[in-house]
Image (tube, rainbow, N blue to C red):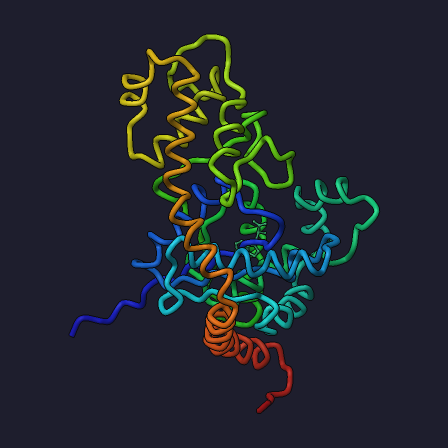
Length: 336
Ligand code: TRP
């Protein structure tokens, strides 16, 4: 008999802060749907990470349900994937504590995101912000994750998760799968509309990003004002023409057109016509998602059903890993 191959597991966490952007959609959410067929996917809304910076409680709660509704609106299937709030599975915090005891201050001080965030939130450099990468390692390792889709900004955190997993395994035997980065096949990085050297980010000013829930007119306006160059030539050249190339990347991922096709089709229409085409493609793509979002967001009973069922299944997997960890570390066994 052929051995049954276990589907590989993918874990991804997304913070429930503010709005999700077109960058989150193209770089992450859109791929999540494709991954669902081939992998066992765990999509956690990482609310405990969110509180490492000050949050308004009402806004945070709303953002949690917004992100969950968006996950469902892009078509993720809660029967296939786990879609739940991190804080509903207590093993995340529990494993984070244990892993804190296997992570060095030196390692955490080298994290560029910590240095960056301590500058931006100089009045609130709390211990949670410092150990943020340990909670992230716990997220990943709890589910015996094989692959983690990460952008460049999270590479260092994934490296740390790997180091901690290997350190723990070397001390106690093979407890954790050591996760690998997953590099998506399509959908390059989406850059800021105003400063195409920077990644599109929801923490930058409004006019630099398109939110997944932006109205069509807002999308048109933001794209019309997107920074380009004075050459008036549509050619893919990220180094010399970062603004135009960014828009070409967006159009290409959403329509499937190649860069050559885009040049051929819009080359003679000037930047105005090209930007309109990008806007219409974005609007077209987001329209059905926004419509489904509205329905899900209004259906609290359904959202609660999804989050509860997923959290229960997540707890079962996470619980198995925690029992192993307890046993190996020497904590007394529990029947609770
Ligand atoms: N730190 C990640 C970010 O800000 C979010 C995150 C938390 C995450 N836990 C994770 C991503 C585990 C991947 C795997 O983007």
